[in-house]
Image (cartoon, rainbow, N blue to C red; front, top):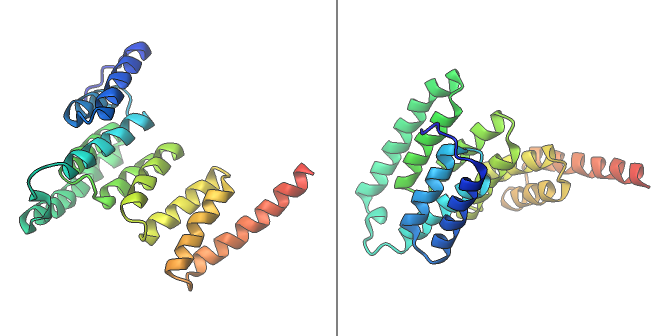
Length: 203
């Protein structure tokens, strides 16, 4: 990853140009600019979000159907497998930027791979960057809204942020999919108790 840090005014200029390219559906140029922003500031939430969206939209508008072929699916699965192995050593060394760069390269081959998005979220969360973690999990949720793991992680992260409404909403979605999920039922009760305590303190 390019470790050179762009000054804030240049970052804003890049972001504005990238957003304009995105709005004009010039996804290839948008991807290039958003990637440059992340090379300078890997915590930039909006740039990463629009980078992922640009890749997904570009894939959707592609004329060929490579991504639906059996060979392509097998390649993406193998690519994810080797990516997960390669980042283990980086995680141990605390090389967060390197991990994210490797995951983004893998995600470029399959922008709707929710396992990669979940891993990106995990890395952010483990390093105390909850807003970035939530952003990537919300993207994964938009791709697969029935993934209970995603919903539970979002519930836990929103709880950490003291966003009780969103936390409860995600746990309730889990219970719609699996009414017997004890963990989510307990989490909702805990949220209700916490909400009661907070209301009493504000009165």
